[in-house]
Image 1 (tube, rainbow, N blue to C red):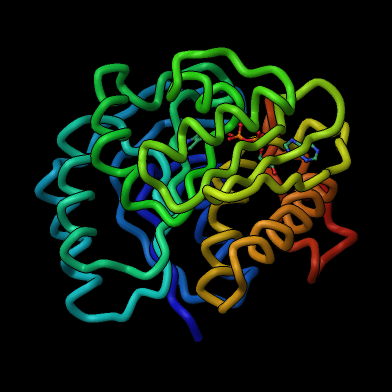
Image 2 (tube, rainbow, N blue to C red):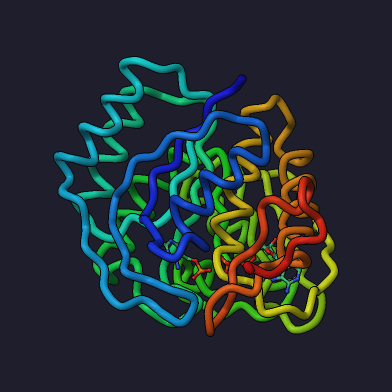
Length: 267
Ligand SMILES: Nc1ncnc2c1ncn2[C@@H]1O[C@H](COP(=O)(O)OP(=O)(O)O)[C@@H](O)[C@H]1O
Ligand SMILES: Cc1ncc(COP(=O)(O)O)c(N)n1
């Protein structure tokens, strides 16, 4: 069995962050491990508070894993400040995992800042060049290049600009587009569009975390990047479609739908 590590924030409600990542890894038949970079007090309605884990402790968690266990892929999610970003980049430069999927989490769906504004430059300079693929949503891609992005043509242009920061590929997610959710992949040579079908359900808490973890799991399992994205897109659509009626706000996706397709309510 392959192993995949998530370096991200904990979501106490289990819909996004580390919890979504580990559920996604299990559903992909890979062994999941975690480095917790921050803890959020969060539910389906919003984020109440965030506390960062010290850079020293983040570094020690990374050391504990890499000095003992082979890591076939890494996914990076919410990392909120400069010092955390720096220690993660320093350690990954030492351990050099084969695949790094970087989800540049900036703001929660509920509108809470998960990346301190002053840490944007460190994200660009330290983490982007290490990424096999970076997976910003429309807003995050816009923040990275200081432009607003609203359509497919602007997504293609933005992907090329973000590619110039150094990742091997850029996937701009179109979940927040008007109309169908199309994701655009750029690998330095050409653009590929991944067409999706919009599912009009309220279960989109953690969709970005889930997609990037599914891509990491698929890469670890030996798929090419294009195959990994295509399979991850199919997975997230199913997970949204079978979303669970949990909480009073934006509900979580369902990682067990392949095994329990009838279950959509917690009872
Ligand atoms: N309502 C939806 N129906 C189908 N696919 C969706 C929907 N919302 C998002 N997606 C897909 O889920 C993935 C996450 O996208 P997005 O919501 O843009 O990310 P984020 O959670 O980072 O804001 C993308 O592949 C996107 O196309
Ligand atoms: C710990 C953590 N990581 C990531 C997200 C982003 O997920 P979403 O965009 O669905 O709010 C989140 N809300 N919490």
